[in-house]
Image (cartoon, rainbow, N blue to C red; front, side, top):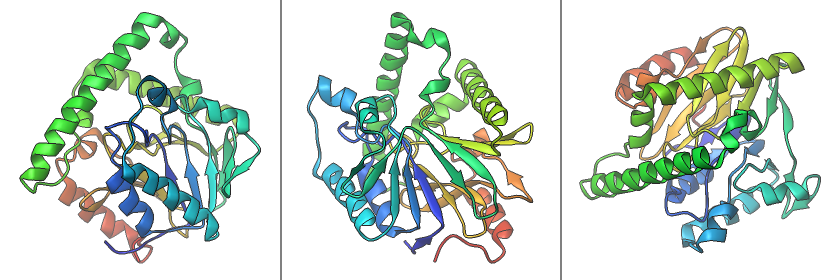
Length: 289
C-alpha cells in the first residue's frame, strides 16, 4: 500500500499475547505510517490474558520492535495503558525505550481543537464490576473472537478479503447497540464538562466517529476484530480507517463536516460507496502519500 502520511495516529486494543490479535495487519499499517505522533490508547499487550495462558507469536515481537523503532526515528509515541495492561499505569510519567507512559493525554489538533485521550474503561457503568456480568461478557466476547478467527481463516484460504464478523453481530443486536450508545453519551458528556472539543478512546472494540450535541466522540476501534485506527491529517481533520488487504475510510470529522461512521458502514457492506464518498470530501487533503 501507499505511505499513509498524517499528523497523528491513534490505535488501541491490540491485545498482543492473544491468538485474536491481527498483528500482521497492524505491522503492515505501522510500516506504512508516516506521522509525528502515535498514541497507543491502551490494551496494547494483554497482560491479563498472558497471566492466564502464555501465548506469543513472532509477529507480536515484530510489532513491539516497530513501535520502538518509530520512537527511535523521532516519532512521539505516547502509551496510555488500559484495563488489560493496567499494570503499566504504575509507570506513568516514565519513558520506556523512547515511549512515554501516561495515564491520559490532551491532544491539540492542527485546527486548534482539543481532545482528551484515554483508554475509556473509566466510563464503564458501575454494575460492570459484578462478577457474573463480567464473566458473561468475557465469555461471549471470547466466543465471538473464536468465531471471527475461524471465519477469517476460511476466507483467507479462499483468497477473500477480511470480514469483521463481530462488528456485524454487534450492529444487529439491540442490547449491544444500546450499550454502545450509552457509553458514547457518557464519554461525550464528560468531555463537554471538562471543556474539550471531543474525546478519543478505545476499549469497547467499536470504532466510531460521532458528534454528540456538538462534542466529538471518536473511538479508534481495535486490532482484534475490526483492524481500525484513527488518523489526523495535516489540517486537523480526523478520519477512521480500516486497514487489512485494503485501506478503507469509514468516517471523517473536520471543522466543516462530520461524516459519522454508521453501523452499515462498520458492517463493511458498502465499502466501495463509503470510500468513494470520502474521497470526494478529501479534495487535496488525502492522507495517503
